[in-house]
Amino acid sequence: MTEQIEGRNAVLEAFRSGQSVDKLYILDGCMDGPVRTIIREAKKYDTIIHYVPKERLDQMSRTGTHQGVIAQVAAYAYAEVEDILQKARDRNEAPFLVLLDGIEDPHNLGAIIRTANQAGAHGIIIPRNRAVGLTAVVARTSAGAINYTPVAKVTNLARTIEQLKEQGIWFVCADMDGQRMYDLNLTGPIGLVIGSEGSGVSRLIREKCDLCASIPMKGDIDSLNASVAAGVLCYEIVRQREFSR
Image (tube, rainbow, N blue to C red):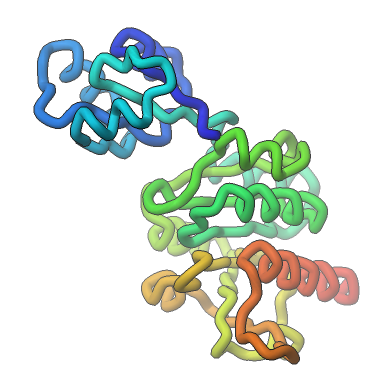
């Protein structure tokens, strides 16, 4: 489960101590002095704030002492995008990034972190909204890879792609209607974009990508689990990098 902090003083201390708060839940209509202070701290870090009825907070609470405020805190600290790029420079390798457009299942995120680590990716980038964060379930599913593969959280994934393009990184997204992955050049500095479990890569993000790659399908269903698709495409990138040396 996600790490959870309850109570006004505890939540405020979490912000002030620099903990990564993914989401903040506040009792709807509660805007007294201490709560306003918490909201100010949350806005400094672009934390997602949900105003919810008392019944919802009571259901979420594990202690019964939430005082109108509950925070969901990342089990692991997030990196910066620059940290990921620096890791590639330190290894003297072309950047290999994995970007996730709306992955909401913590088991999928954990599995992708594990695969990315084994494939030699330098890091993972996830969006702040509509996506799972670094929960305890993610950490367990990654089988320890979360300790070695930096994960950055960004406010705007499309803007991040544009900024990384300026640094010479090309982007390829997983898309059933794209070209066969075997027919694409996936060498060099690259960012692999994997979409959400239900709808895949969003239209805006797909339009920002340079290439769309499809995985050949021989079975009776038309899609793979997001983490499996990430694994297949990661290792096609590995294969092409090995043969291009």
